[in-house]
Length: 96
Image (cartoon, rainbow, N blue to C red; front, side):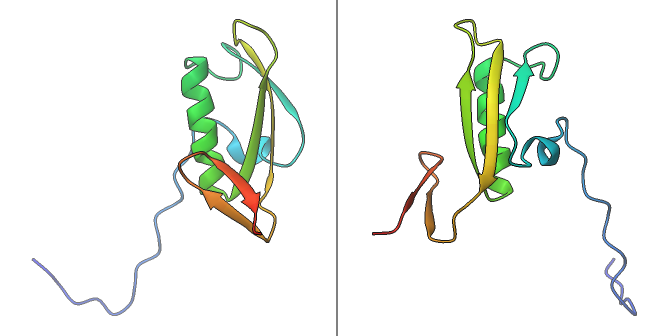
């Protein structure tokens, strides 16, 4: 049953994430290894990283370092102020 409160209760703590996205998205280039740094399939990790970057308003570049896709180099950086985000392609480009 609904009840009237005197004030808003404190917010619940922010959920924790499986991977340290905020650390990895600090603008530096990180090398990650499948089985050590991430446990999912490579294409799944790529998708997860892209969505995590989007939620944090970051552009993400991932380069696979081997053909088996077990090692990758990743760098994320903030959107340029004039960037427009294309959600379908997870990329950004400057306004004309």
